[in-house]
Length: 334
Image (tube, rainbow, N blue to C red):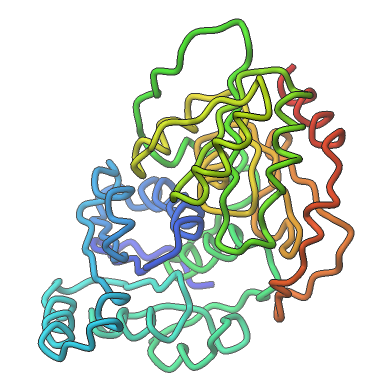
């Protein structure tokens, strides 16, 4: 690791997607600001995630690109327009690619030459290393939050330890969501996920709501999740349909509850970011995806997971017993 670089005044962070990864990467901002209070930090992300970052008090500017739309349209005009936009962002003292994919490394290199990323043994797509001026090594199977913060802090010449993470400030500065006042505890239950095998069965979610007997807000994203949420609300007297939420409203909502229970998905990770108690349920993935604390816990099915070859047909999350979730929830709600 290089010594602290006192001449750093401008930093670009490339983290294009996905929601959970952006949430877990954004924690680095408070630590960079503490070490380099005068540095301007800019972030490059996919357009859909920009609202989460645009008003962040520690970011000087947020730049957006739309790679998915480019891939879909195959428009040469838009392609060259995107390249021109990236090349015109200005000069940075360092550009950190926190994603470690070929596409993100190319984006970083288009911004400038002073790029930093994962080395060939640390990245899922090792070819990305050819686009970096400097690299960092950390085991690929290391905790995802630790990977993110190590990469950035190593490139910037300082270290972040566990005590700093355990005492972090909340990542996003949002107003509390106006939940109705009640003697019962407010619990957010996130039922969605990117794969079906990562979702806890709706039947068991309804049973969980009944056993908890608190205000259990069912958080949904798309129309299919809304249908499942409505089914849960119909089958449990304790389940309440959460309102349709924008990205910022989602952060505000989760920042206002007493506990979050959810699958391994972006909205669930917001709880840790905002210092809210949480229980993450894992089937085909592992606790590597969260930073475990005394109030951010997890339950994992008995299936064996190879993180280099994730089995998307592993539906073992359904085997997690409701009573075990309820027990951990009660402990956290004391």
